[in-house]
Structures are given as structure tokens and as C-alpha cells.
Amino acid sequence: MADNEAVGLCPCTTPGTGRVLGIDLGTTSVKAALVAETEQGPVVTHSCSRETQAQVDSPAAGAQGMEQDVQIIIKALNECLEAFPQEHLQNVSRIGISGQMHGVVFWKTNQGCIWAENGTGHTFEPGEVSHLITWQDGRCSSSFLTSLPQPQSHLSLATGFGCATIYWYLKNSPAFLKPYDAAGTIQDYVVAMLCDLKRPLMSIQNAASWGYFNSRSRSWNTEILSESGFPIDLLPEVGDPGGIAGRMPRDWHGIPKGTAVGIALGDFQCSVYSCMTERTDAVLNISTSAQLTVPMPLRFQPPETPDSLSTVAYFPYFDGNYLAVAASLNGGNVLATFVNMLARWMAELGYDVLESNIYTQMIHAALAQNDTRLSICPTVFGERHMPEQLASVTSISASDLSLGHVTRALCHGLIQNLHSMLPFQCLKEAGVKRILGSGSALSRNEVLKQEVEKMFPFPVIYGKDVDAAVGAALVMLHRRNL
Image (cartoon, rainbow, N blue to C red; front, side, top):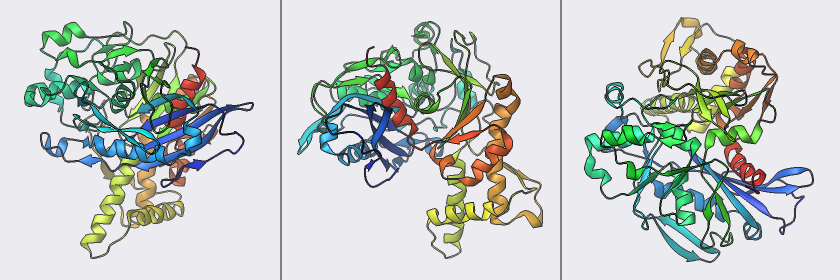
């Protein structure tokens, strides 16, 4: 996918053909895809991506905070849509939106955005909106989480979860919450703005990712939350993934007024939806973080209470089904941290080297190094089931310190970490016949691919890095009668 222009991927449809727009508001980029139904099936006609670089300082939480500027995210979204041909946007009939899960953004109802008219129609910019506190936020320490009420949910609470972050503000900076009367994930915010929703509407997928949500009863733990003083008025209403949140009361970038907008979805579920075609498929996604998943049997219900030490979580999918997920906090972000470290070392030595050049050279060096005795545990960002276990390097010898050795060991460690969470034997027992690989970090790293094939001896089929945006569009395309 190109970063600077919309890419036409299929000339086989005409401008008059109805299209579905899929959008993914990711951790590092915004992606959009136009999908058309053809006689051969759904086809991506155009796609676009913009890096956001939206990270900002977090004065309240310091170094542990991870926040993003919503203004920058929406600017990237607008740039993506401006890159699409107007005649195609004018034929969009539905919009599906996914985005990074767990995080939270706050806004003031009726003042969350400012609409303006330009040459191609209406666009909006954020108004009375907070920063996005992302899923990577680390302000909620283990001791803080332990002090909170026990959720009535099958998922353990973790730092970066929306409800945990709200509790943190409630206890450490209650004045911060006073200007706001609405909250949601970044994708919930965009849906609310497009549809002029008076109260946010959140899918079960995103609600489960916030904590304090019971997937069986499909409801928030309102009694537990109320007793501890939690501002339950901030909690969105919850609907089924694949349902319609509303219709746009005005055009948007030339997309017609009245276009249906789906309830916002989880980026992970949409990535899976875009590529999983058989129940014997496992999906491996490595982008900023990493996930390995398999579908659970039909009618599976998760346990009543969470197991905080379990390496596998059960994520709500579609139609009441669940995915078993090894959800690692360590993926492409670890590689990016390594590259940034090398760039800073080079700068301290008096050399200015582009990080993209460092990445290319380190992958090239690792491809020439098939194996290494060096061992790297890559959990720089901890794991939800072991938040205190950080990264380490062992078996260091003078002969294994080349760039190729270290890069090979780092890529091996990332895949080994996933394997420790959901081993090959478990996949085999679940009836897995092949692995579908997706995500930007995996698609452009041949060394990671080699390590996947060593660790998981199944046939592996690699996809594209537009999966979540395409998946969001496919959900709306397949469920147009709902």
C-alpha cells in the first residue's frame, strides 16, 4: 500500500458501481480501502495509507503515558479520503470503521467536532476532544490495578484498557474528566461524529476490550462500577458488531448524505475477518503488536471469571462466536525500538542515518545469518499475563554479536514468545491446517517469515498490510441486509 497516494488495485469495475468504504484507525497509521462487489466476489478497487506520527507527551502520567493527538489522526484520515477519486466516493453506500482497541478518548457531546465545507463536500475536525490514551499506556501499575474492583468478565483488566484509564483519572486527576460527557475508542469517536450520535454506540468487541464488560450478558458491570464511584454516564451503549450505528446527516468528502455507517469494530477482529476463510485457519498478525488466533467451536462460551495468568484470551468475534487469541504486546514495536536505538547510537557517534536504511540493512544482514546461539527474550513492553517480565539477552558470546546475529535472534525471540503463548501442538489439536500471515511488520520482514515457518510447520499464506480496513469494509458488504 502506498503512503502518498490512493492505489487503484482493480480496473475491472466502473465508477457507477456501488462501493463500501473501510477505514482502520491504527496505532501508527490510518488506512482506507474501497471495496466493490463483482461477479468474481469482493474486490479492493482503491486503498490508501497515511502514517500518523500522532504520539504526544503525557504531562499527567509522565513517561508511562502513551497518548496521541486526535487532531493529527483525523488529519491523516482526511488526507486518505482526499486521495480517492471523487466519482468513487460518490458511489459509497456503506462505511465500516475499525481501529485500535482498549484505548479511550473523551469528548463533549455536540461539541466533539467542527464541520466545514470544502470543494468536495463536508469534512470535520476535532473540537472539544481529549488526547487518545492508547492501548500502550502504562500509567496503571500492577498495584493500582489490584486496588480496583474485580470485574465480572472473562477478560482480565490491564493497563491501557479504557475503564482502567478512567479509574486512573478518577483517582489521580478527577478535574480532567469534568469537561467531558462522552467517551469511546478512537473509532467510536469517528462513528459518533459522522452520525451525530448523542451517545456513543460501541460494539461488543470494543466493549470487551475496555474491561468491566460481561460478554455473556452483553452488559457493563454497572453495579460494580457504581459502587466504586465510577462515572458510568461515560460508558457507551453497546450493539452487535456488524450492525448499523446510524446514517450520515450530511455528506462527507463527497460520500452521500444518508450513507449507513457501521458500529465501530476492533481492528484485530477485522484483520481476521478479511482473511480467515476456513475454521481450520489460524491467523498470525504482526503489526505494532502481535496476535496469533484460532476460532473457537461454535456455541463456545468463555469462563465466568478471568485467569490473569493465562496466555490466551477469548475475544468476541461475530454472530456470538469467539476467537482464542495469544495477544502479545510485543511485535513490530520491538523492532522499531531496536532500530531507533541503533539510530540514536549512530547519532551519538556523529553519524546521521535514516531509520529506514538501518531497517533494510539489518534485515539483509539477518538473512545471511541462518541461525545464532544468541537468545533474546523480546518482551520490552511486558505482557498482560506477565507485566513485570521485561526483555533480556542471554547466551552472549563474542562470535554472535554481529548485526545479523542480533537481528536474527530478535526475530526468533518474537516468534518464540508467541509460540510460548499458543504452541504449535495446541494449534494442531485445534485442527489447524494452515496459517494466514498478515500485518505490516510481518509482510515486509523476510526474517520473521522464516522464523514463523520454523516454529509453526504449517503451510503459511501471507496477506497484505491493509487487512483491518478491508475487513471493516467486508463486514459491511456481507451484512448489508442486517
